[in-house]
Picture (cartoon, rainbow, N blue to C red):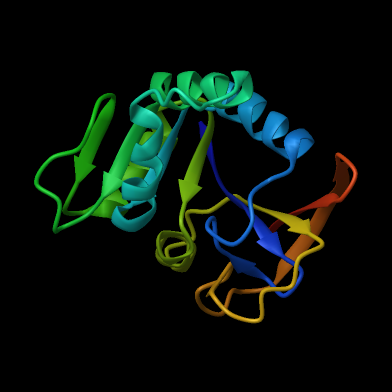
Length: 176
C-alpha cells in the first residue's frame, strides 16, 4: 500500500513560494534523492504547470538541476484538474472522482506518492487520504503568500525532526 506524503519547502512564517526562495544546495540534493525514490506524484493544476518547467532541458542548468529533471520526468504523475485538457509526458489527467482514483492508487501501488500543492493537500487531507506531512522550514520570513496549510487540519502528531543541510529543519507529522 502506498503512502501519500505532502511536503514542501516553506518559510518560518509557513508560506510556500518557489519564486521568493529556493532550496539551498543540500536541501535540493535531498529533494533529488526523494524524487528518485518516489512511486509518483499527485499535482493540482497550478503546481503541475509550474513543475512542467522540468520537462525540457535548459542550457543554464547545473548538474543537480539536470539530475532533478531526470528524476521528475521518470516518475508517474497524476494531475487533478477539470480545466486542463491534456498533460505532459508520464502524466495522467484526473478530472473526476478524485477520491476514488487516489484511494485506488494507494491500494494498488507501493512506496511514497508525493502530493504537490497546498490546495490539493487540503482537499486530500479533508478526505483523510494524506498519511504524512513534511514541513521543510527555512530561515526566511515572507510575510505573505500561499500558506503551507490551505485550511484547518485535524490534530497532527510529530513523529520526526531532522536537520537537512545547514539551515533547513524537516518536521514530519502524521494525523493524530
